Structures are given as C-alpha cells and as structure tokens.
Length: 397
Ligand code: PMP
Image (cartoon, rainbow, N blue to C red; front, side):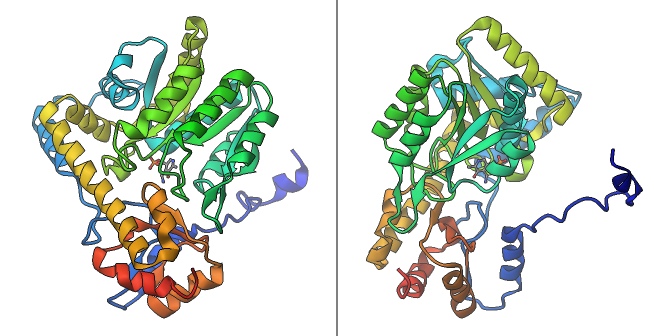
C-alpha cells in the first residue's frame, strides 16, 4: 500500500457519503407544526389515520409463536425452509411446490436477497453487466456497484408523458451480451408505478430466452397491485420461458413486517449439477454476509401461510390496503384530470413531473412533502386530503 495512505490517521481516507434525503425529509415533516401537512415521502403503507399498523394476521401468528416456540437455537444459513416452501406456493403457484428446479433461501429482506444475488453473480462472472432501467429503486445502483457488478442503464420511463419507454428496454436487451443480467421489477414499480403490460413481459421473456440473458426479478410488492395471483402472472409466465432466473422477494410490504426484515432469494435452474453448485455458493456467501437471517418475521409468515384461517385474515387485510391505494389513485384522478395517469399505475408510488423547485414550493407553501424527484407515496394521503393535494398541484400539472 502507498505510504502516504499508511501515514494518514485511520478512517481519514474515507470519502464523505451523501446523506439520505428521505430521512431528512422525515425530520423536516416531523418538525412542521402545520396541522394540514401531508407526508408523501416515506415508502411505507399507511392507513387513513396515517399509521403503519401491525396486521391482525401477524399479531395472531405472533401470539401463537410466543406460546408454542420452544427454542431459539440456530436454524441454519438458509433460514426457515418451511417459510421458503410456503412462500413458493404464493409466489410461483401451488404446482411448483416440490419442483426441484426451483428453490430458495431466506434472506434479511428484499435488500438482503438483492445483495446476495449480486454477490453470487459477481462470483460466477466477475464484473458481469446488469441492465437497469432508469429510474429505479434508489438502492439498486449501490447494491450492484458495491458487489462489483457493472451497470448498463437504459431509460425505462418518461416522466413528462408518464409512459414507459419500452423501445429503450427492448433495444437494451437486443444490445446485451449473452450471460448479461436483466433487472426487472415484478410489479408496482418503485418509483414510477408504471409496469410492463402482459404483452411486453412476453416480449422481454422471449428476448431473454433467445439471447441467454439472466432475469433478476425484484418482487417487493406482491398483492399491492391487482392481487396476489394477478401480480405473479408475469413472473410465472417468464419462468415458463427462460431456463434460469433469480428472484429477490420481500415480505416486508405485503405483510407490513418492515423492521423484522423478511425476504427470500429464489432461483430457477433447470440443470441439477449447476443448481447444486449455485445453492452451495449462495449458502457460502450468506454465511459470510449475515451467517443466518433473523427468524421472527419469517416464522410469522410461515405460520400465517400454513393456516387457512390466518391466510384468509392476511389476504383480506392485504385487499383492504390495495383497495385503499387504488381508491386514492381514482379520487385524485377525479379531482384533477391532469392526474389521470395515476389510475394506469400500480402500487404505492408514482413520480410526478415536477421540478425540484416546484417540490420545494409545495413543501413551503402547502406543507406537502415528497422526494425532490417528484416521487410520491400515495398511501401517505388520507382521503379527506385529496382535494387539497389536487388543488395544490393544479398550477403545475
Ligand atoms: N426492491 C424494491 C423495488 C423496493 O422498493 C424495496 C423497498 N423499498 C426493496 C426491494 C427492499 O425492501 P426490504 O429490504 O425492506 O425488504
């Protein structure tokens, strides 16, 4: 190592990192004394009262767990395989339970699954290219970069017309090299809410198969778009066309388990020898990253999914959450025709075509808080606040 570096005090050579602007926004919102303020910043589901409650199904499963759990001894690096198995039926369909070409392991949330996938890819092909549509979830770039992957960016969405730039995606996949990785959001795209149509998915699946590209699917919002089954259709069709794929899954939104960090990394691999090597490497990587995933939330999900009555409680609550967001989208579109695009989009998010100055103006003049990119979390809104938001946006949209 260079002697100047060695002479520097420890940590002095570290670069300053940008602060998290969403966390700053939370603090600004908290400090705002105005009663009519609206928080569209933070990316969690909120009910009409602005709370992010523990779901009733989770509460019931937690009390069952509290009385029945006899040990907290280690489970192993793959985590709770009962959880993984039960989740396979929800994500991929009951028919794929027991299908040896598809398996997975528990991870600390969707973030853990993505990081593990990235580490695996870099081990398999150091510096492999991952194609990422822009804009995307803010954490995708650093996760892939830190793991050593190369990112090729293409335009996914045009904010001004609120439409997908599908030709750019198709062109990216036509340009990609064999073995490149393609990151796709399974649905409820963060930050735009704009999802591929069924036909577009079919086209992408065919391109991946034809050109031997590896799909890496980020599924963080199953059930918050059109429904648990509908939200999985595109993924299931894709997996019927491509031999290999990785799927990073989060239970933190659809079970509202956020801080309990529940997720899984699934893989489909048709060839048995390669599949076993893949699993061995995932286990080896996870062992050095977190050794074992946190248990509690995954045990709760397993209990819910293995009990028909609890599953019903959960799916009903999820339907209420989904319905609330859909209703808010429809109400905003009714209140202001310039927001009609909201009804064509899915999930919590949309990215409004606002400049950073307009975003700041909304905050200072009306107490409406959102990311400077114009990303809004619609669940931050109470129905009674719809007219105020529509009115405040009128001069800009
Ligand atoms: N992917 C996307 C697209 C997300 O929006 C999020 C959460 N904001 C995640 C993955 C990761 O979620 P978590 O780590 O909380 O499961």
